[in-house]
Image (cartoon, rainbow, N blue to C red; front, side):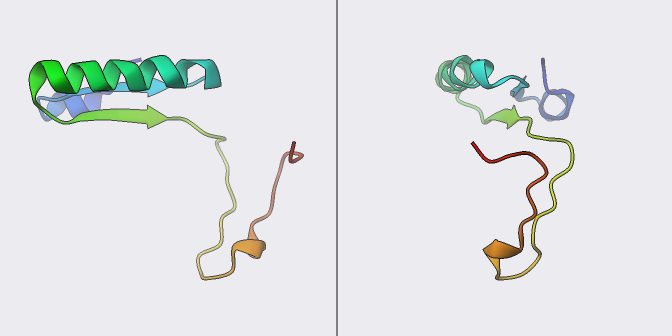
Length: 68
């Protein structure tokens, strides 16, 4: 999926939605940056809701899915 935000700035962008898309998306970004000599954006989608701490305590994170 293309990133319309980066296109608005005249740069390229691509979004990875599934984990198996990450590697090929990063490879695309490397090639695109070399080809165009411009910044590129790789947007990696994570879970929709993440309860992250807004302070120094990392142990305040609440996991909504089981940790593997």
